[in-house]
Amino acid sequence: MENQDKLAQLITDYQNGRINRRSFIKRAVMLGLALSSIGTFLSFENLSVPEAMAQAPSGKPVDLTVGFFPSWVGGWSGVVIKHLDLWKKHLPQGSKVSWDIQVVGPPIVANLMADKSQIGYMGDMPALVATTKRDIADLRIVEINTFSETGQICSVMMVRSDAPDFASLDEAVKWLKGKKIGVSGKGSCGDRFVSSLLRKTGVEAEVQYLDPTIIKTSLQAKKVDAAQAFQPHVAQIMNHGFGKMAFSGSTWAAQDANFILMRKDFIDKYPEAAKGWIKADIEAMLYIIKNPVETAGMVAKELPGYSVKDLWMAMYGRYPDNTGSKESNTLMQAGFDDKVMSFIEESFKFLHERNAITVEKPLPGGIYTQLVEEALKEMNLKAPLGVIKGLPLSEFKG
Image (cartoon, rainbow, N blue to C red; front, side, top):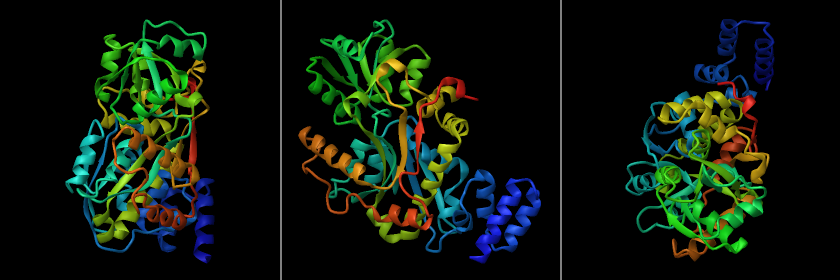
């Protein structure tokens, strides 16, 4: 406790300019702080004293592969971990990390199943389905990094650039009658949103299931009249004039999420590394909350064809006023609270109705909460970590 008090004073002195960087490092080392922890603090300068004093865990070093796709905002904490080397702080010394970077989610699931990777980031629907395939591989959901209670990650309806400028949401919905609507995959978060929308509004339309990567080209070429899209595709479509946004799922109580999966045999063999990865991801989420332009810049390096502005808008931009969207774009969630568990239960029911799975609820242990609960407790944090609210474009400083 005495060292923590001294470190707290040292941090205050450094942040207020009373000592320089060199003196801060020297004194922090004398207080027993690891060089890796000092480096992390100097990168963020917003960590709590307990976080700053945390050192790399003991345990067996691991050689693991992590899958994510940056063309989905749910994978962005993985991008931050990669670019800031946060895993080096939280995994046992001597560990190695390789990256399985994809443009869509299904290859990540396949590689987890085949043990070509041990950790994977993916959208809610494929993640939930993956946990039911224990005859192939035992995969567990261990964290929910992004959770949009407003449906503003995946549940977005775009329309052709030559569609009318709708005076109201009701007018926009009625316009969809008899139209062709592109949806990014059957049994996907987009399928859940569009099928719910059509059921609730009574609108009849022709749904075409398309690969997420060609949704925007189909909209641009006017092969479809409207399309459900997810971020950052939505921001790119708007910025480049491929189409315009009609509404988000906020009005119809849509919710979206991204989960992190781990192989159960990896958790069992390397428990320290498994929990360490969760800590790295939590730290990445804290960074995303506080560093919008820097985060977008990291993702831009992984995602050719997208500008930093596109990516900033995807996570931090405010949606147009006439779309029924809410102030909150998404939560940096981490843990599994009652709202998350209710969302999971409803999603299982949807997947079962669509014959995507044979069970109506998660298998025992499929939602594996232990790692994130321990990580949050040890880091003296609570879920959700924070909310990302939509900002006007004038706030973009890229």
